[in-house]
Image 1 (cartoon, helix red, strand yellow):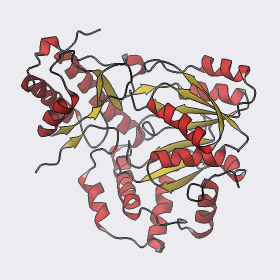
Image 2: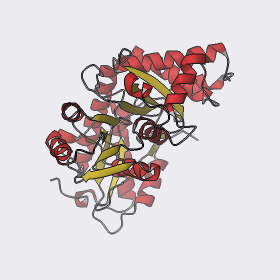
Image 3: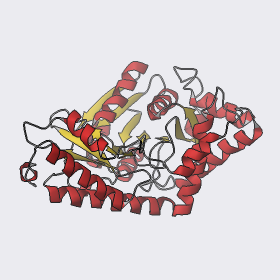
Image 4: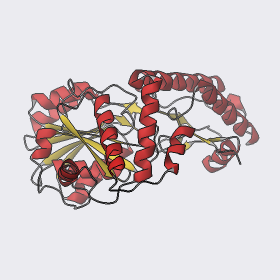
Length: 373
């Protein structure tokens, strides 16, 4: 059976070299593995030019584990978080604040409307109790890109702290810690770096992390303790995801060989353009306008035909070698196609052909697949 190509926002299609790296077993206290972890953290910090200002704290688990760890560790128990929402992951961040017992307020825009710096300025003027602002850089539920740099400047002007979920943007979209002030920027192994899932990491401001002792609600998710133990011993506090770390190390070597962030961004942008053009030729329209569409994942309106069922469509596309993602919008019927992973323009065009073939097989005539906006 041929392995299908994952056109999803993570897990995603990885290279043979990355998968090969997981065939070796590592001792979790072995000095060579400790060196591997240190090398990974050093390379990750280099991507944001953050070695001077931030620590890279790796953590077992998916990206959501790392988001919860950042909120729980860096927001004091008497702090208040302004959560900026225009999709499912902003809502999840607010839920984390609720579960942790951190005071929070939300500001929600439509799923196709970025939060603006002016919004944040107004909200911070109106509520002096806010200590932290939490932002999703690229909202994976739609692919919308929020204006991180502009919002970060406003947050700093108000003397507040910024926490950024950069899960779907880190490694592909430029973020410079020397120019964009943040207390925490959070990402994971299985996204734009093209590793496998299982490890999150938080770039934590050194001063903010040093002041965070005792904040955390959890033993396992305490970034202060995780960093302090690693700095002292070179080891993870608890059993590390050894194979995931090895795969990420190998993926980072390939990232550098490809040309780093600029080259990764360019490949994803070409993938996205090939996808958008091909789908437009079929009559399928994207949910977002180009100006706010990140080249990570694209949301498309589902065909307006009574014979369309996502599960049937998904299985037919999968049989042709591609795995898509269901839509995650509440008001509109959509599906999503990722542009990231070890894929190129030719594979994106092949995916468009598979989508067309699947719709034909469902007896959905292409001219009826919606009218371009």
